[in-house]
Image (cartoon, rainbow, N blue to C red; front, top):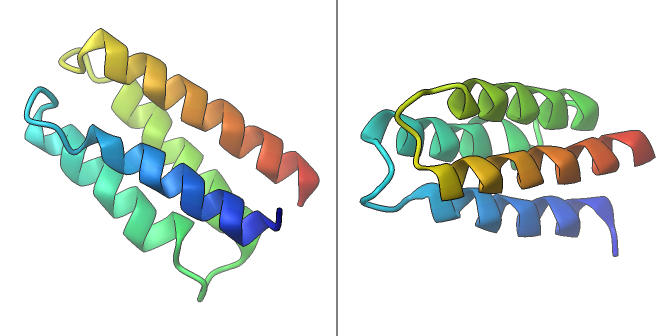
Length: 87
C-alpha cells in the first residue's frame, strides 16, 4: 500500500473526531489538520505528516477532549510516526 493511500485512511480516522461529543474547537482543529496539512499535496510529504502530528498533539492536550477521542488521537499520532519513519 502506498503512502498517500495510508494517509487518506488516517485522514478518515481523524475525521471521526467530527462528533457532537467533541468540543467545536477540537473538531475544527482536526478537520483543518487534514485539509491544510495531511492531504495538501502542495507541501512536502514529511512536513505534511509532521505538522499534522503537531496539531493533533496540541488537540490531545486540550482538557475538554473526551477520553475515547484522546486515545484515538494517540493512535493516529503513532500511525503517522510510523509513516514518517518510512519516508
